[in-house]
Amino acid sequence: MNIKDGFIVAAGLTLAMSAMVTPARGDDHDHGEQSAAGAEVRFFDTNGEAVGHATLSQGPNGLLIDLSIAGLSPGGKAIHLHQKGDCSDSADGFVASGGHINPDGRSHGLMNADGPDAGDLPNFFVGTAGQARAQFFTSRASLDGEIGARLLDDDGAAMIIHENVDDHRSQPIGGAGSRVACGLIEG
Image (tube, rainbow, N blue to C red; front, top):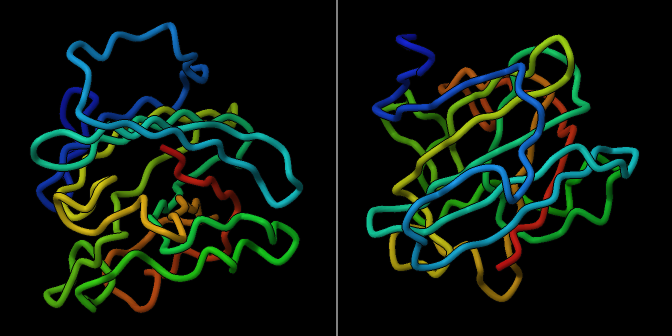
């Protein structure tokens, strides 16, 4: 991992980070030209409290994810794309969302020679005030399945935030720990 000018470069992906920014509102940033398709995610913690949102924009080469979080404990967090659009079991740790999106049966981990699976994304960091803003790009998934795994299928998909960072190697989730927030991907 290499940090330069506020950007983190990991596993060939560039991730813009700002851990101390207030959550973005839909009207305070300009995305320029609109993407071919978009989706929204509203994150809730295990107590059912709203803790943030994400906007997913499908482009010609993959999926751009713009994340804004407030209310999580400080520190590094893993985030993954999960196979079922079900966050109904918050008290049980969001296990109803299933495992990672993984139609190709790849191993978990951005740094795994047999991976990554389609649900793997870089880590992000929550600042001491409990806020984070991050942007991710993946070419392993898209909303309609035109590129990589399809997120908006019959049973939907979810984004899960874990309590710790992902080591991007070990199975099945890189030591990321408990699921602390879940959001349905809704187109």
